[in-house]
Length: 593
Image 1: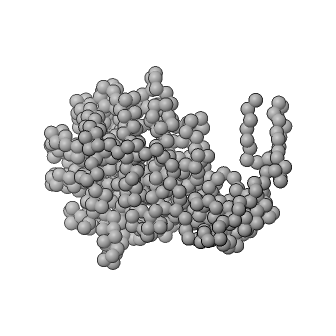
Image 2 (image 1 turned 30 degrees about the vertical axis):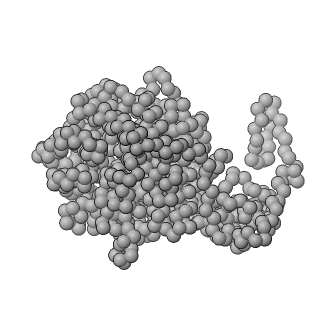
Image 3 (image 1 turned 90 degrees about the vertical axis):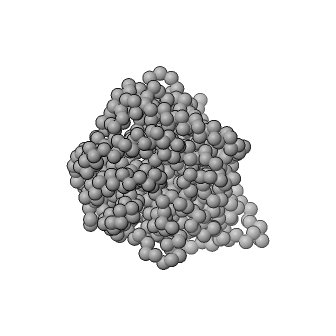
């Protein structure tokens, strides 16, 4: 005797044993809200033939058969409503009033009227129970436990796979993952330095200094991914140089940097999947848009501008490509396709504000220094596109990121699916928020917080306290999801770290630290094994054969690093965000000052 509430009353079809009730039109119509107080100062005036696609506050209209006055009053009454769209009387349902969380991304739509609240609204913060701030001694204790996990994972690699790409943490055997460039060793260098494991750092440094390793870097195997080599190997060497200033890391970075440079298309900036391949019919947006930080920093430390010039080619090409409100399809040069902040697109967007900051950010803007082809404008447009097109809400009011199937122009369909990879977005939004006017900055902080809270639910709503790879249908029970594994991903920890450092969110820092600490403790409890940390097959199951014998290098390079930085003392951060930019593998590069 299950009662299923339906959004629509048609089409009806015969089904034995099932009874349907359909409320009358008058009964279904909610009463109009009272008009706002005359002295509220808030207005919402309609303009014809305009709409904001997506960004709905609810999954159904607030009113049906509404007048413009009733629709405007419904929006003004809610302090989380930024705009309201009123469909035509001949639409189904007729004269439907849709309340919107954002007014960004206005498009022309015949027969629809749009009112935008004035003055602009800032979203209401999601309610939360803030944990008490922890003492400096407790923060130190947390850092020591995370450092212990770092040492445990490193020791497993060092004993069983030193100099190889990675270690199988359960079997304890070395793994060649197609790089043959000691990926775990290089990716871990700046983490070892950061947490004070200097003996381990020096041993790894001596391996990097071997001429035989330099020859490998100069000629990467054809199987190695250009993208992964750039962010893990080149990025790892540059991060190690940044923190230690040991010249051997700059030397080795130039060797692998020359190999990457040679694979960047000078006309479009696209890169092939591997060193032995070509870009193909669908060159990845993420791959092409995730060499710029590394190339810029390499130009700086070598005094050779060729790397920066080659990195610039992609932005020169990409800014002229078709897009939907600043959102681009996954294929470089594509005119239709998937619009997402997840796989094959994520780090393209991530690097836009980071390139701007690396080159001086607001100081360069004030000094009228030429920007790297309009990356700040592209970032601003993408933020607006995200708010207008990709953000949705669940029944609890939580913010989610959807994906779109874009058919060109303003035509698209929506897929309610959010990857753990997309949990970098709160960090991406929060990083740029301080450089906007305060009204916009306040709104962006709340968007970043709301998405960061959803990323916490990825973890908190599972029996293990560990996140799945993806959630479909905004349903954290994972009934609709077929990707329930966890492979030690870092993006949620990254988000909470950035949120904790964002001006204007200081009062929520204990909350972000609490989320990070609980997530770390769950992962360490369930996935610590003899030679490191394993991955998990199904985050809903706590028992049985539920581990995957794989430890990605980003576990040491990113995930554990962000967990550690999140618990640092407020007054003495190791890597302040106004002085350092992290590449997408969490390797730090100092900004131009």
